[in-house]
Image (tube, rainbow, N blue to C red; front, side, top):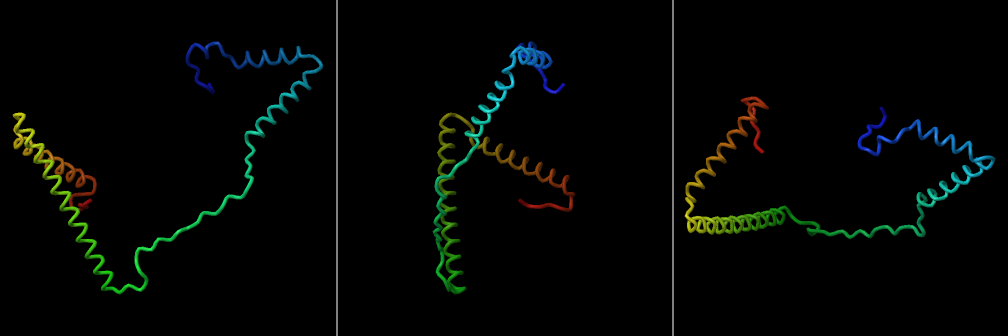
Length: 154
């Protein structure tokens, strides 16, 4: 079967019935049936040609490209190294700020947990144990996939 039919609507639809009904109506149309068919085809073609036809009134303008340079031309190796070191110091300072902020948030959550009567130290030990268990499981899975002697670090 070409199409899978489901539901009440498709139970009443029949391809052979459609073809039979079409032929009956086509034969009853009389001597004008070919003219009516040609007119229907022409109207359909006209509508689709209007829909499909793609037209540009003007040529699209080419985009303008703006080059942004980050570095000066002719920098020495010492200048490059100094810039890299400054960038690394900036990244480390940002990471330290983020770690401090994370520690503050963690401290706030611990304070709220203690005030609520929760054993936050036990929860932290359990979280560390779960993380270690997950890491060991991932390492075991990796060893099973790649062999015991081959371990790759992500």
